[in-house]
Image (cartoon, rainbow, N blue to C red; front, side, top):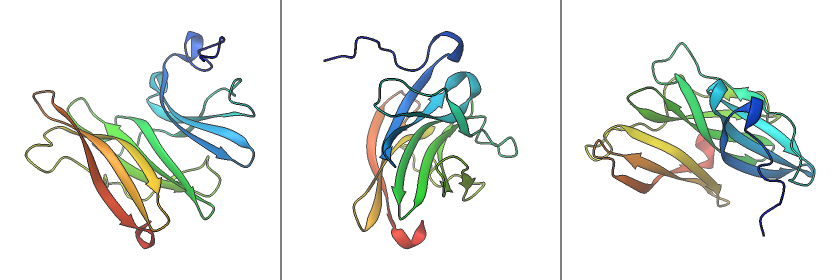
Length: 166
């Protein structure tokens, strides 16, 4: 049954809030999301999942790179006290995936100025985006979307990163 007071976040002065990655952590819900007017990733917190704090930017675009004019679509996992965040960096022509970590879930540090996943194969063309991440006890499994010039979208299992790499 849909909650009668939807939407719980976004609209009005906040603008578009979308592509949520949700964690239950330390007794609260943490909603990592894309905050379109800011071109950034944000965090909102809720005790019960119905009333949310205002978004707080946790990662903004890196103006020193050529692939992060805007960032969105977070995928997050907390493992051994570390938050592992994969996200989409976008320009007008391309989408790529970056990776950052945090010990508090708010202050994230990019692990590279380069994307960790980018379009390289002929069928990938312009976009690798929308990371969804799971920790299976041994490796991080990441699925993502690839978008070709023709508009064809595919779902891909792209990375099985050993824990020692992250």
